[in-house]
Structure formats: structure tokens, C-alpha cells
Image (tube, rainbow, N blue to C red; front, side, top):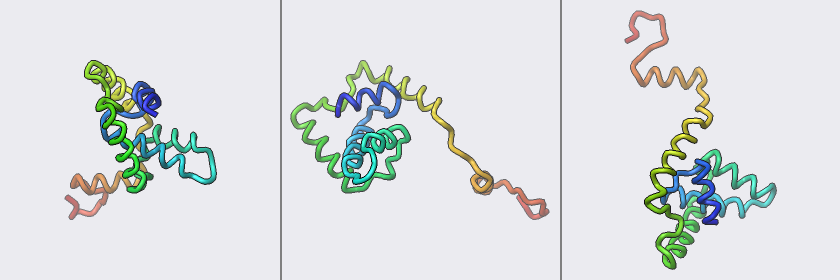
Length: 127
């Protein structure tokens, strides 16, 4: 699993930080729990699209316990060496920039405009 994690970091799917290590392990646990479908596809979908919101607290707790067990034996498990951090972070940021942008519909635009104090109305009482 650690090898897969480092491959995901190299490809820019995750940043390599502790939170992403926890999410990565929890995604693996979720994928193994599915009854119907292909666990590999579920796992890759969660990782590539960063669907951390689909992970349950129980899955995250199991992942945290697993990460603690790994790090009791070797504190450097699921951690990048300091020399790798800068290079990996730049790859991660480049991958993030090339990722598909958020879809913005008309409702989202109106909500953002309202939050910014702009108005789309032709009424004279608009700010």
C-alpha cells in the first residue's frame, strides 16, 4: 500500500502529507468494503477525484489505527524524505493546475456574485 501511495504522490494525485496518507488508506479500506463492483475502480476513483467526503468516520478511524501501527514499527512509513518534498510538491501543484476545473453553473455564479456584493438585477435598489 505504501508503494501505491508513493506512486500516487509521483503522479500528483495526492500531496504526500499526513492527511493525504490517512485519506489514501481510508480509500483503500472503503474500496475493500464494497459488495458490488470493482474495488480497484472504486479506489482509483476516490484517489484521482479526491472524493474524501465519501469516506466514513469508521473508515478513517481504521486508517488512522493502521497508520499508527505502521509508524510504531518505522516512523518514516508513508512519509516523504525531506529531499523529496520540494520536488513532489511542485509535481503535485502542476498536476493540480492541470486538473479539470470546477463546473460553474448559473446558480453558482449568482451565489458568488451575491456573496461579493454584486447584483444581477436591473432594479435601482441593487448595490
